[in-house]
Image 1 (cartoon, rainbow, N blue to C red):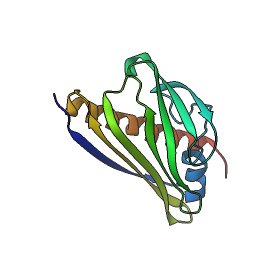
Image 2 (cartoon, helix red, strand yellow):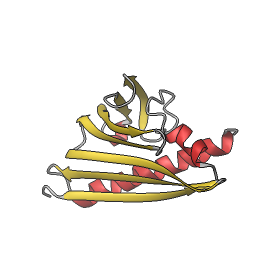
Image 3 (cartoon, rainbow, N blue to C red):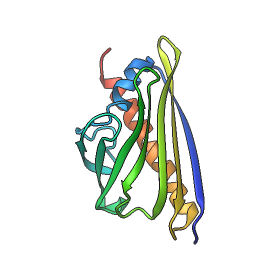
Image 4 (cartoon, rainbow, N blue to C red):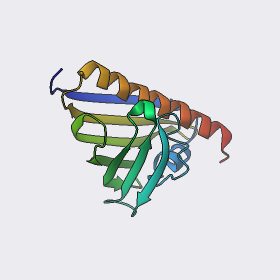
Length: 152
């Protein structure tokens, strides 16, 4: 155990236009909770755009409680946003920063690049990295399901 920096980048490929993927990923205020189903029980949002706060209610197996994220950058045209933790809740991390960007591969295919960077705060680095990767797996499965059941 110790304080170690973790850097994660996940590239996800989808058979959907960048605009369709961004319509889900870019919805920072998705209060339906569908995108985060499997690690959260709900979402609350205060504000819009840069500075917006998103409160995630974690499942008990994810530590319970809440985590508050603050959007720090947003580029609609570039289909990109960045966020940091305003309140880490039960997460044993600090200096957390994440990004999400959707990139068009073709008219009917796109790529989502998601990054996370943080310093563990006394937690085992391997366990924290594994939890981060599992969360990204959940997001990828949810997004695949949401794209398959949506039109457009």
